[in-house]
Amino acid sequence: MATTRAILTPQSAEYPTSNYPQYLVVNSRPCLGFDATTAETCYWTFVVPQGFTGTMTAVISYMMASATTGGVAFDIGVEAVTSGDATDLDAGTSFDTVNTGTDAAVPGTAGYMEQISVTLTNQDSAAAADYIRVSLKRDPANATDTATGDAYVLALEIRDAA
Amino acid sequence: MAVLIDATRQAIHDEIQRTVDCPGTITKPQLRAVVDAIDSWVDSNAASFNTSIPLPQRTSLNVKQKSALLMWVVNKRYEVS
Image (tube, rainbow over all chains, first blue to last red; front, side, top):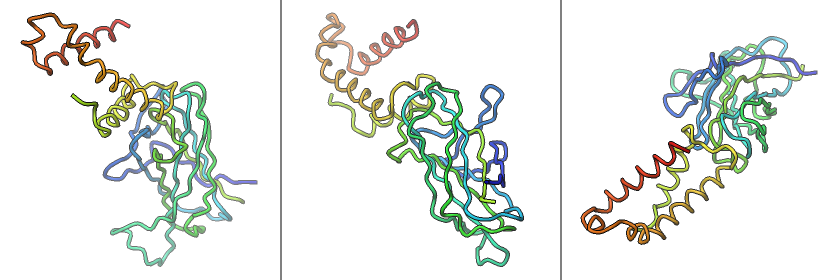
């Protein structure tokens, strides 16, 4: 049985200096608007809780701004830093290879929510107490990403195998 | 005038998706095909469009002015639809 280890919301997202999703409030619901043609990325930071074990799964809750056909594709990256790691946090990043998750058919009504479950096979050897960042990027270049307009991400849940 | 270059057609495809006019019932490849088709149609019918403009305006207006007027007419038709 999986255990929720982090619930990541639009309000707590962090952004790079360029090409990031727009923070929006749609019908009183905070969300992140990921463009359909420019790859946009955001991040979340947390500390891996005690008891964490196994391979993580990320669950993306999203809805489309206007599309009712086509699919979307997201890449999720993990950067896990253990105490004493030779990672210069004020000068660079050390994300593992991204994990790709797709939904080949967005909801038939814009505004309906669906979830994409992504197994984080590449999780940078994350372990309890690690300082961890998760990146989320919509990948317009992915052949599955054919839905027009913004994809609104409502939440990102991180689960482990515990 | 020739058809728009690929980068311009792609820009139309990209930019319209950031507006309220983003069509949700077709996919991105289908949208691009529509952009291409409309541009090709405009190019193919440019002479016919020009002929439709009465004289002497046809010769006294330049291409940009004729295009601007076409945009205004189409835009007003869009606003009332």
